[in-house]
Amino acid sequence: MPILIFIAIILAGCLLGFIIKPNGQQDGQISRIYMVIASLLVFNAALVNFANIQNAALMNAMVFVLNWGKSLNFLLIGYFLAHISQLLKSKNQTGSPYDLQRIISNSLWAITMINGFGFIIETGYKLKNFDDLVQQFKDYGYARWFLYFIIITETLGGIGILLHFKLKTGPLAALGLMIIMLGVVFTNWHSNNPFAYSYPAVDAFMSLGLMMILYGFESKAQEPLAVDR
Image (cartoon, rainbow, N blue to C red; front, top):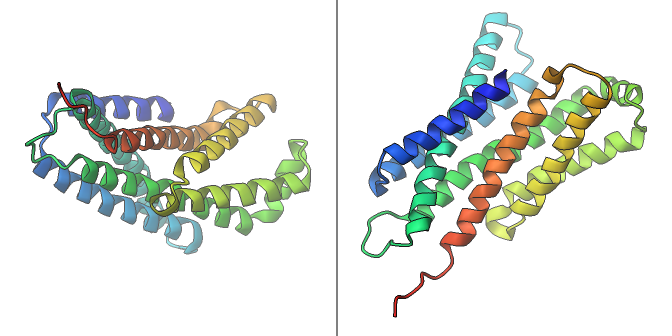
C-alpha cells in the first residue's frame, strides 16, 4: 500500500508540474527549498538510526517526519521532472529567464543527498546489527561472504552517487544499487515473505529510478541546441 501511495504522489507531482507553467524564479526558490529539505531528511534519518533515542514520543515523531519527507521528496521530483521535460522537449530556451541547468543541478543535488547518504546510513545500520544480519542471510541460504559483498557494494554505490558532480559516477552507481534492490525483492519473494518486507527496497528502487531520469535530463540539457537553418 505505501508503494501505491508513493506512485500516486509522484504522478500528482508530475500533474502539478504540467498544470503550473515553468517559472525560473519560482522553480529556483522551490529547488533550493528542496535542497534544504533533503539535508534535513538525511540528518533526521541518521538520528533515527544511530542516536539511540530513548524517548518513544520523540522517536515516533522523527519517524513520522521521515515518512512524510519521503512523500514530499517524490512530490517535488515529480514536479521538477514535468517542468524539465517540457523545456527539454520545446528546446526553446533562448531569451528565457529559466535557468534549466541550475534547476536540474539543484534537484539532482537534493535527490543525490537522499539516495547517496541513505545507502551509507543503511551500511551503518547493517554494521550495527551485523550478527542479526549474518543469521538472516544464513536463513535465506546466502553465505557470510555475500553479506560482506552487499555491505561493500552498497557503500561504494552510495559514495559513487555522492561523487557524481565530480566524477560523473552517479548513473553506474545507481544502476548497481537498483540491481541489488531487485535482488532484495527476489529474495523476499523466493522466501515467501510478505511483500511488505520489500517496501524499503522498492522505495529505494523508485528513488534511484527517478534520479536516473534526472541524469538523463542533465545530459540532455548539456547538449547544444539545434539551430534552425
